[in-house]
Length: 101
Image 1 (cartoon, one colour):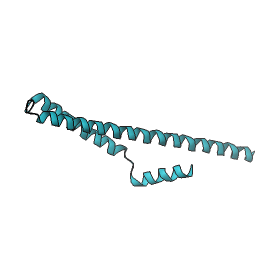
Image 2 (cartoon, one colour):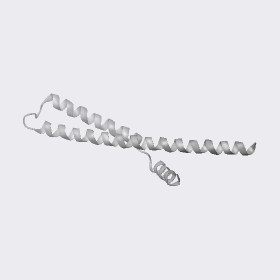
Image 3 (tube, rainbow, N blue to C red):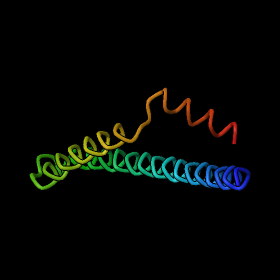
Image 4 (cartoon, rainbow, N blue to C red):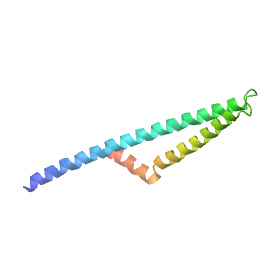
C-alpha cells in the first residue's frame, strides 16, 4: 500500500514540475512579446517626433497631442514591462531550474 502511494506521489510531483516548466516558458515568451511591443512603440514615437519637427507640420496641435499620447503610452508600457521583469533572484532560480530539467 505504501509503495502505491509513493508511486502516485512521484507521478503527481513529476506532473507538477512539467506544468510549472510550461508556465515558465509561457511567461518568458509573453515577456519577450511585451518587450518587442514596447520597442515598436518607441520607434513609433521617434517617427512621430521626426514628422512633428518637419517644417510643414511644426506646431500642428493634432501631431503635438499624438506625440504626447505616444509618450504617455510608452511610459505605461515601460511600467508594465518593469512589473513583468523578474528580479535577479527569480531569474537565477528559473535558470537553475531549467538546467536541472
